[in-house]
Length: 160
Ligand SMILES: O=C(O)c1ccc2[nH]nc(Br)c2c1
Image (cartoon, rainbow, N blue to C red):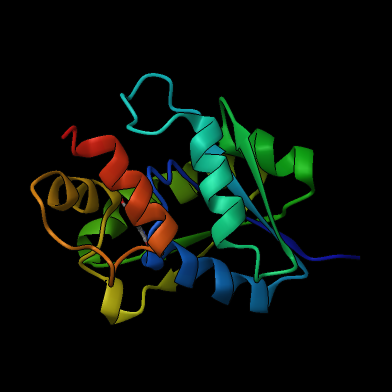
């Protein structure tokens, strides 16, 4: 019986912090589904299609990692893909309150367990929103995101 996990987020855009979590989850589970949240409500910089495409390109080296978008409850995504576990990266104690609430809710809703992976300290300050802001004002984010992501960010944020 394959052990399948899901990693959910908006990934607007994917960073090395996310990719580190995916790679480590892919070591722990037979299959990992990266679940891209449509989050139509929040004004994402990249469309869900662009976010899915960047994730597929940047996880191409992980053979047991799949990418798909979803709307609604993450537990429904898990049940659809046979994932019994949600994997979440935790960067700092400040992440934990919200993560704990969501984990308890998701277990209550559908018996989906949550596994927390402490982020590599290298990336514990990293967030997609910071990467967007730094790129917008001319900063170099090449140590925080893959080259393809940086070029899409520049293309999108620096209207010459
Ligand atoms: O990029 C973000 O906003 C973000 C949020 C929450 C997160 N937990 N673990 C990681 Br890696 C991570 C990244």
